[in-house]
Amino acid sequence: MSNQSAPQTRRLPLRRLLTDLQGLVLLHRELGVDAYPASPGLLRLLQPSCQGRQGRDSAKTGELGAAKSPAPPARPRSSKSAEAEREVPDLTVLAAQLQDCRQCPHHQWRQKVIFGQGSAEARLLLIAGYPGAAEEGAGLPCQGAAGELLDRMLAAIQLSRRQIYLTTLVKCIPEAARQAATSPAPPEPAAISACLPFLQQQIAAIRPALICTLGPLPAQALLRTGKHLLQLRGRFHQYRDIPLMPTLAPDFLLHNPEMKKYAWQDLQLIQKFLQKN
Image 1: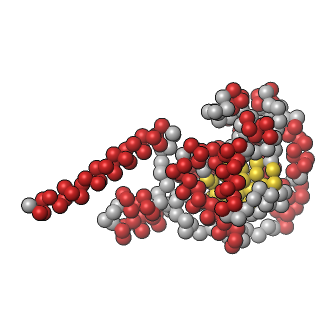
Image 2: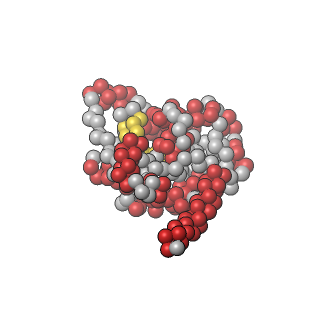
Image 3: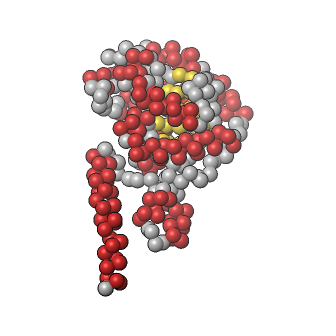
């Protein structure tokens, strides 16, 4: 009798856990999340009796949430690359060029071009997706509640906006974002294609030691991939010869606070990289 009742006692908490997980999965599906970071905790949950196998699977898949991911070494600049840097315009010239940009329909309704903010010699370059109403009103990237959260994220790794450079992939507010600021739609592909060369010139002018993209759009554009952000975050990629860390955008984290722990893992990797290089 005791042997039969013990398994039933263990199943009761598991049923409640499965019910809670089902609700969470349905919520994430509505939010468009189609993959989860393969963190050590998640692997332990999925494989509770296979601890040895977990370690081998982690090495094969390269978990997106692992905080022990080694940072790629910084590459020395060659004389050829240094010569190329002298040929690119500085940030002041780029900003002046963008004021009259008419390469996509966004110029028809924009009030301000959101160029960027911070140190032109920053070691860390942060790239958000596109501006909204708050950003256009201030003329600066990442404003409002999302900007306050970003400031706290930076402070957690002993940085401020004065020490980094912050910009956006798309430089003008999308029409949908102006019409519905509470639930803005992403910019059209034409706007991304038109703005990407300006962003690439900004990167060449700043020449950061590390790039961090906020949200899926800048990561996908620079890495030329259609992969979901949760498949990209948590490890370093390469944009040309610059390490690039994709992470979650502050506005997404405001509506999905349970995902903040993954952004914190990414920030820790960024901090370790900057300390070592």
